[in-house]
Each structure stands twice: as C-alpha cells, then as structure tokens.
Length: 256
Image 1 (tube, helix red, strand yellow):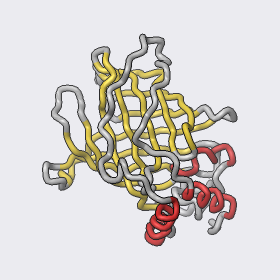
Image 2 (cartoon, helix red, strand yellow):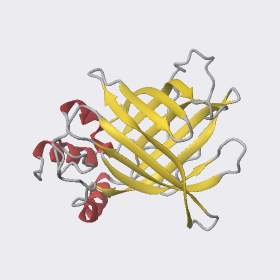
Image 3 (cartoon, one colour):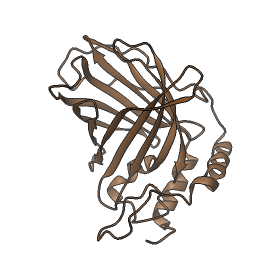
Image 4 (spheres, rainbow, N blue to C red):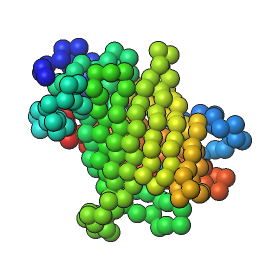
C-alpha cells in the first residue's frame, strides 16, 4: 500500500475547513413508504457541543490536533489477500473512488456514546463504534457495534445491537444504504447530502425475519459532522403508527 494520497488529502482538508453543517437539525422528507406524512418528534441529540458554534479556524485547529493521534492508524489487515484490504484512513490504502467524494468525511472509525429509547424499555445509555471503510471500489462498507452502559457511564461489557451494510451514491447524489440488523431485520434507505457535512436517509423498505422485531417500523436517519468535528447521528422510527425518537449518539474519530 502507498501513503499520502494527494487527491483524498486535498478533499479531506477542504472538508475539515467547512463547519457550516451541524448534526443536530434533521429535516423531514416525505415518507417514501406511501404512508400518511407525520410530523416527527425531535430525537434526543448528543449533548457535548451540540449547540456550540465554533470559529472555523478553531475547528481546523482541533481537527489537526486530533489527527496527531488518529492519522497513522488504520484497520487491521491480513496483508496477503489478492485484492486491496479495507481502509478507514484516507491517507492509506487505495484511493477513494471518485463516485464517493460526497461521502468522504464519513470514512474513519468513530467511537463514543449515545442514548436509546426502545419500545418497552426505559431510556438507556450505550457505547458505540462505527466504521466507514472502502476498498477503492464505488461503495463504502458500514459496521456498527453497540454495548450497554450503566448509570455511571461505565461499559457493562455486554454486546448489544450490531448493524452492517454498504453505502453507494448515484451521479445525481442519491444515497443508497443497505443495512442488516443483528436482531433480524434488513433495511434499504435512500437519501441525499444536505450539505458537505451532513447526510439524511429515509427507509424505503424493511423486512423482518420470523424472529425479528414486530413493532419496529421504517425510520429516518441523519449523520453529520458537528462543529467540533465529532460525528453525530440520530434515528427516528415509526412505532405503533407514530414517528418517535429511537437512538442518537455523538462519536469522536479514533482512526483516519
């Protein structure tokens, strides 16, 4: 593999300097399921820095400082495959496919914590790791792992929900996201960038297995870089005919 991918570095640098988008204000596209439009409730937002507006120079400085500890890290690799290994670091591995430039800021490994309110359960805190990676082809791979945390914010060391899938984006900037949920559901979401630093998606199709969730309906999801360059995301779900907050988190970059 070769280091210092000039094109990707240039795009990554430009993205870091753009601090106009915030992951705390999702819009409400029309429901693609053909269901009657409903006004969603406001999902609980990540707390740290959620309302903070940073000076662009401060944001760049913070990103540069964080990069000192993340820029040389990458995913573990076998190294003996006849094809490129996945990379979550734009400085390493194959060049990012030109068709994915609108999703470039997502590439990396992100960790943090969030809040969830699942049907029949009290609201709880969870830890999360998300990986957006690529292998040079016109797709991003997506992997999410979560774990429960106690009331004091300490991890319980018990794995919780997992998701895996892929993102693609068309020439007209329509995003396709395919997600397999560990609790027995497969989901197709469509959406679009709402800025250079935020992306909104909505369920177009969901299918549950025989043992999968019976009440969890289609949803809306927003990913976005916050003013401090953390990744924030929120998810609302149609449950019992009503769009309600489901999960949200704020994650810091640890790789890339």
